[in-house]
Image 1 (spheres, one colour):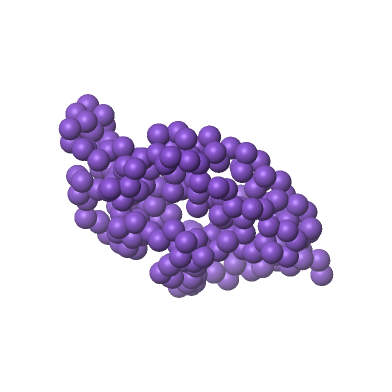
Image 2 (tube, rainbow, N blue to C red):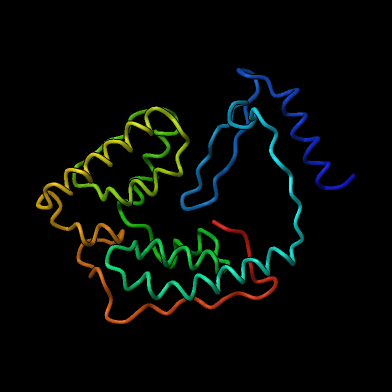
Length: 212
């Protein structure tokens, strides 16, 4: 049996035997800290069956190296843009270089806003309200909350952050540290560096590992 056929049959078995209200699966989301998320039938079974595509490891590695080289050429411009999220830009470069999420978090420890937003994602994924503060780093929270499961609580919470950004746009005095916030940096860190941060070097062959 080919690998493509195997996954097609596996999905078919889920459609037949994974009953709503009875069946439940749990997945572990790799990261720091590791979290678990429950999946129901609605999370897995779609109205249209997904396409199954099998690609060789050689092609995957070649594509990742090409994507890294293209991103490396753009990274210097991103780091010079005062409106760019510098931490996210560097993290994405490290991801393309083949580092795992745990490795990236060790090199660039999460900020307090990132940690708080990730903890809030647990509540939002369970459709429970999470605490909102006007002095949150709203751009960072919006970025992190995208990882949460789609629920009504998540929609309401993200709307609060969007509304806060609109108020800051109208009255910049509400965000005295707005420049630092836009880069996802802690207060006290300059928005721009005196020299561009060197981009990570591209991996080769088997050095490429799984993504974030």
